[in-house]
Length: 160
Image (cartoon, rainbow, N blue to C red; front, top):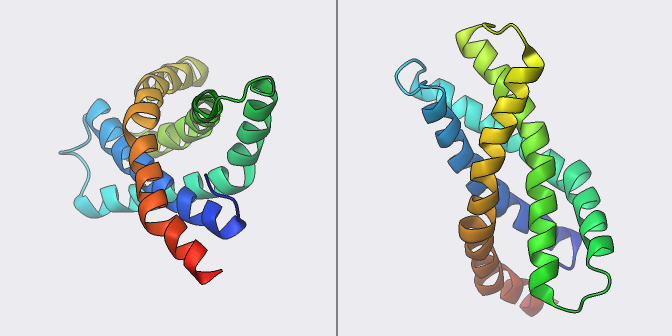
């Protein structure tokens, strides 16, 4: 989809905004924090999560996920397989790192209350992965690609 660094930035901004927005709401619901944190705390959690996700997307998870996905799909010409593989690799990487952020944010708001950080992390990762994968593939991926093709790509082509 994105072919230039600028297009990748726009695509990443839109994708990260949507994914972080819905995953923030999901995690607030999951941790029963809607009544226990203020609106401003929720916004700050979202903004911090968005910034972390964008940095991960552009510099760490995104480049590695694309390399791995393109190696896995090297023998196919079907674009759908490549898109689904990239999306899956992205979700695995982003869920891995963003679950750490979510666990830290939960500890910050609620305090540390677990006997095993590893067990709690694996639980958070599993819950996030189960929601993030279909959200990415079924909802956000198609919406962001539509927005990108309809509004970003034509603008970029007309400027060139």
